[in-house]
Image (cartoon, rainbow, N blue to C red; front, side, top):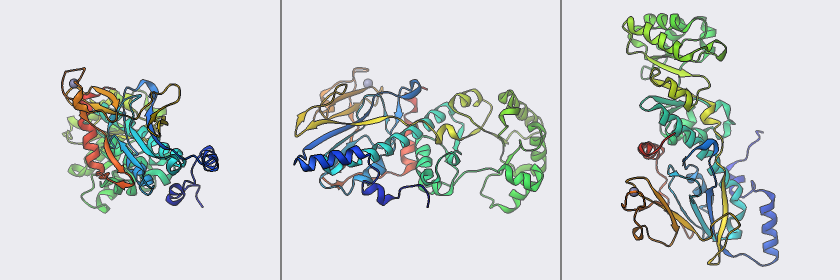
Length: 389
Ligand SMILES: [Zn+2]
């Protein structure tokens, strides 16, 4: 069959790195199974990023929900976090959860990488829309995770049917080149789309298949009249020259013919840098590999307490910690987890710090409320005023 693990494989710990299994065997043989606290944090972001968006929490909670006596305290999914900040503390008998380290980190590292990139793209886009069109760049088995992570990070829509279902949204799409090639003409294909597809779906034509974008834009605009919502330019790199100029020219030609309401959608190998350059002229962006294939964030999981004793490896501060945050100036502080936010004043504005950690699992009982993807996304985009690219 396909080269993929199923949920049962993950739940049973079959996706563990072998050295955890061996450590387990040795601990069992020597009669050691201490109560430990372990912390998950990131030592540094790629590409000079200053912040990340935490994702993968829901899957991690689901993975650990059956583990006896385990407790999880963490930032909620969609939280903004910075390097060296603990995002999760796991407390339990080591043998109960040690073998899940590979899977836990896998959930968090990839989902957070995608959510972070999506947030960067949406932040760059401002009030323009971004859609995640990159499911095709990843193994289809993980497309729902990829698209949910893209959505909670800030993407306005995702393209696959199952991915959209998971986010509670309608999938978003335009017209593939294949349809235009088979129909033989851009206007004919767009007219057929308009005739066949249910009216609530926006009519967006694709105008780079056969002819110049300017002339194709005019043809479909005149051919479809008021029915046309937008045109997508997926101009191949070999023809691109100055993509912004092409978009400006199309906009001009549409406007002088009274088609000011027709939106311009840009796609094709774009990332947040391109969005910044094009956002004044494009109304929406289809983003592929930049989001779905975003680099992972390298979280690590480290023991910080054993049987109540604070201990950790070199390069890591011992003791289980948490992050408290000033919601006024977005300044953070890391304190021991039994400390109180109210004991500190914000070093940025002298305001109040707030607790941001949540108790996701307490001694085996799941307390996490599994928020809707749309609510997580709203929370993420609400923090953009504090963030810079
Ligand atoms: Zn403050």
